[in-house]
Structure formats: structure tokens, C-alpha cells
Amino acid sequence: MGKRTVIPFGPQHPVLPEPIHLDLVLVDETVESAIPRIGYIHRGLEKLVEKKDFQQYTYVAERICGICSFMHGMGYCMAVESIFEADIPERAKFLRTIWAELSRLHSHLLWLGLMADAFGFESLFMQSWKLRELILDIFEETTGGRVIFSVCDIGGVRRDIDGATLNKIVNILTDMEKELREISHVFFNDHSVKLRTQGVGVLSKQAAFDLGAVGPMARASGIKLDMRCRGYAAYDRIKFKPIVETEGDSFARISVRIKELFQAISIIKQCVALIPEGDIKMKITGNPSGEHFTRLEQPRGEVVYYAKANGTKYLDRLRVRTPTFANVPALLETLKGCALADVPILILTIDPCISCTER
Amino acid sequence: MEMEQQTVRMISPQDLLADTLRLKNGGYRLVAISCTNKDGMELSYSFDKNYELLTLRFVLTEEEQEVESISVIYPYSFLYENEIKELFGVRIKDIAIDFEDSLYQIPVKTPFGRKEGDD
Image 1: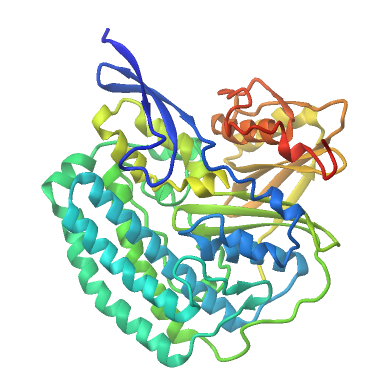
Image 2 (image 1 turned 135 degrees about the vertical axis):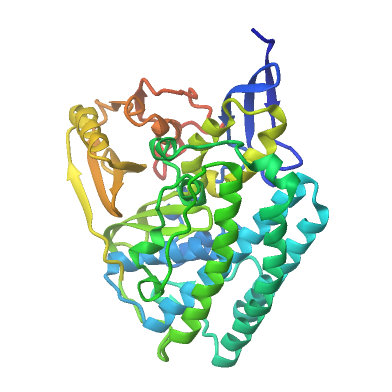
């Protein structure tokens, strides 16, 4: 029997962009179990729905997270629109899909950079974030913002993207694809990356299901779960298949996200080819009454918005269940039996977003 | 507009474990547990199978604000249950990992269980 030690990991750690604390129970240098502790950035944003009316709350929803800001706004708007039984204009659906996939590109590139940084691959980190800058530039040109966009609104979107800009976006993404292939080559083939990730932190398909994993975490373990398959926004007119790997290890999770980068580019190109002319917003009057659960596929996985309205301008309840919240139990499972040195990499492979988790 | 089928089934708190077990055996995934503080604590347990959402729901009155944890069936429900316990003040018994109201470590006790005007 080795020596048992409890090591506090976090809330501040070089690999953690946001604070989370884990008590790691070790036997020698092997993790026996991990106990999470959150609460460092809980803002009570769900409670704010009692003070901000349902229109104003769109701006609050966007601020749940600085990476998935657009998708939070979109999910909230979709939940309220569903209560109104409003079918928003087709062009707005395509624009939302384009911005959502750009958000996926931005999020996955940010994550790839952090992952490279955790390996000590500084150049790869900078290459990944250089490409991410291109996406942020597109956001700035099309929405006026790089982090918070405020383009999503109940009933559609506030801004249109003209044809010339859409073509420019396609050209930027086509050029980006070439550079992405070079970066991916390193992630897929580098000896050190493989050593640090292959066979490490394995989450079996059954364990992923039993622990409620979502997003790339679930898909890397062989679960074909992707909310975009439900066909919300313009996804019902786009050709795509969920990216699924079967190994369930850290390498598989990297692989899923890298392949989703190329998939996101393909989806955006399809949207540009298919986007119809027309209105970008419909007028919605009155106050919502009823309830609805809306689910989207954020970069980290399934997110749930539950909105309950009472016919006044203030909602009774808004509940947001974010993907990182759902993936914490799966993370704890992958940590069991791993070496202490692998803990930072394993935490990163779920792409944790603590702002989302705590709201 | 979304076309998802959403079913909300009202149950009694006493049937929660049995109904949850049936869903688990039927291959359902627990998606979320939500609580709404309106005329009592309304608890909604949402499950998914093949992208269809099924929600089990009941309302706890002031007197009976205690419910069994479903972590014996879905172990990962512990986070949802700790959150509801700490933010809303719903008493949930036998949670697999009970943080004893310190998941979020907030200074205000059960903030979501309070209404405007409460002390």
C-alpha cells in the first residue's frame, strides 16, 4: 500500500483559465479519486431573470460566458421564441447558424491553443490563437464586437451580413483550412502529443453514458450525441454528421474537436451557399406565457435552457444547464487511476468553462 | 421554430425513484434537474432518449420540502441536487456526494428560495 496524500489542485493553476478546485486523493503519484469544489465565480445570473424583463435578459444571457456568448443569447432567444410559437425568418436562422459555427471555431481554436500551451508547445499555441484572431476579426466586422455581440434578439437577429462579406468570410475560412491542416498534423502525429494523450484518461462508451457526458467528451467515447441533429436554426438543411471517435482517451477528444473545426467551416460554407434573401427579424408583441426546454449544441456540448413565463414581462424561471456542468462527473471518472502529472491535461480535455458552469 | 416533442408528466414525490428507475432501465439519459420557486418548489427531472425530452415533475408544498436523491440511480445527479439544495433550500436526502450546502460557498442562505421582499 503506497502513501496516501490529498493534494489541493486549483483554484489557481497555470492550465486553468478559470478557477475550479479539486482535492486529489493520491496513492503515491496515482490519483485514487478527486472531489470537486466550485463557487469562485457564481454570479446568480439565473436569479436576475426576476429583475430584468424578458427582452433585456437577452443581454444578460450573452454574458453567461465570454466564449459561447453568441450561443447563450441564441439559446435564450430560441426558448422565448418557442413559448411565443414564433417561427423566425429563414435568413435569420442561417445567420444564427453561421455565427454559431464561427463561435465553435473560435472556441475550439482557443482550446487547441490552451492544450498546446499545456504540453509546452508554445509555437503551436501561438499558431492556434493566430487563427482564432481571424475569427474574432470576422465577429468584429459582422457584429461590431469580438466577445459580446448583441446580434441575437427575440424574433431574429439585429444585423444582416451582405453577400460580399459572406463571400469574404468563405475566402478567409478557405485560407484558414490550409493552416489548420498544418496545425492538425502536429496534434495528430507528434510523438510527444501521442505519448501524453493516447490511452490516457480513457472514458468508455458505457461510462460516458452512465455519467451523462455530453459534447466532444461523449462523442470521443463513441456516443453519437449532437443536438444539431435535432435540426434547430438552419441545421435541418445542412449536410453534416456528428464526429465520433471510439477510443475515449484524451487523444480522441483532441481528434473530435480538430475534426469539428473542419466541419464548422463546411457548415458555414453550406450556409453561405443556401442563405435566402429576406427579413432578418419578425415582430413579436405581448408577453410570453408558457414554458419550454430548448437544447443546442455548444462547442462543449449540449446546453439546456428552460424558460417559464407567466404572461408578464418577467419570466418566472430561467434555468441554464451548461455542458461543463454535465461533464464534471465524467472528468472525475477519467482522473481515477491517472498519474498526477496527467491531471492538468485531463482537465483540459473536457474544455472546462467555469463561467458557464456556475452562472 | 423548434419541433422537438416535449412531454411533462406530473408525478407524486413518492413515485420519483420508481419512475426514474423505469426510465433508466428504458435507456434514458438524465439531462437536467430544474427547480422553480413558484407556489411551492416545483422540481422537474428531464430525461432524453433519441433526442426526445421527457420531464417528470412534482411540486413540494411548504410542509413536505423533502425528497429522495436519485443519485442511487443516476450517480451524476449529485451536482444538480447539491445545487438545488443550496440555492433553493429543498431538502434532498441521501445524495451520493453531499456538499452540505457548500457547493457554491455563497454567503446568502438559499438565495433562490427567497422572493422579493424577503429578509
